[in-house]
Length: 334
Image (cartoon, rainbow, N blue to C red; front, side, top):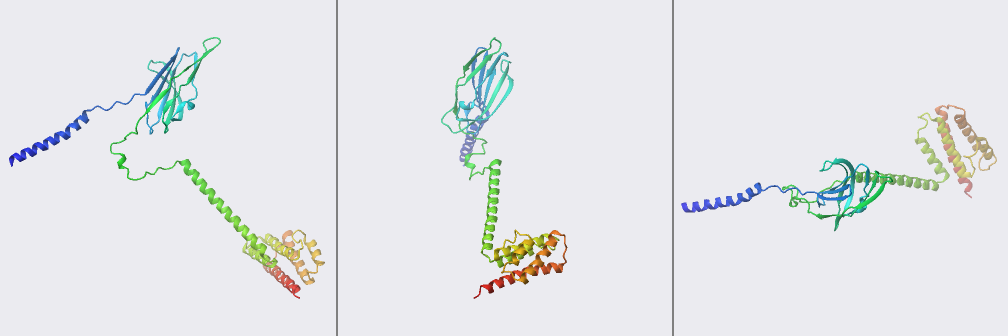
């Protein structure tokens, strides 16, 4: 039994040693050095151009910072061509310049560009023609030289934190849309709601117009009279506007029922016209004269009628419409 315990304890100790050895190796192992940027230097006389791409490999989840470091004497003007048409597999995503000092402690001009990689079979920066002007000579001399191409190798997507592996993702990840996209969608929804509201109002207006056209002159006049009373203009002390609308209702009824252009004529012209019209009896003509003249006093002479006169005017308009319609029906009967 004691021998079995000893063998078991030795096995446990051996397993512990086997587990600890890789851990010790991992702890003693120095971290992998960071990869150096891709660097190319081109010289043309006193001009020196250094191309620096950091990082040197293409990661689809990282941008590359391309720095063109130019050293030239003060009497020479160096000009770089546009970079956008020299890229393959990249999208130019920002440009800025800065003054710096190179490793030889010389003042240099740095032209920095941020390159965003896209899905492509090849990632490269084609050669560029760099032009220069020597202002120290008379006349100034000009020249140019070409840079070498930069070819990039691709690298896998970074692993990230050890605890965050691809196996931890259990479902789709929601990516919030950009503010511009949300604003455009909100604007589109507002425009759609506004267009729907306008179409709804237009449809109601067209439907109402069709209904009014199908009404008889009396039905339309009664409808307009009820709409006028619903505005409650008398209680709002808008008596002048009330009389104006009331007289126009009566005039429009006469125009539709008897083909007399009552809305366009003055009161005197209208009264003369109905005097010679057999459709208007003397008694009806007298009522219309009193009705229209009272309305003219309110509209043009600042006359303020009592409530009793206002009620009587409304009753007169309603009675005239009903009486006239009744006379028309009796006239049509054989």
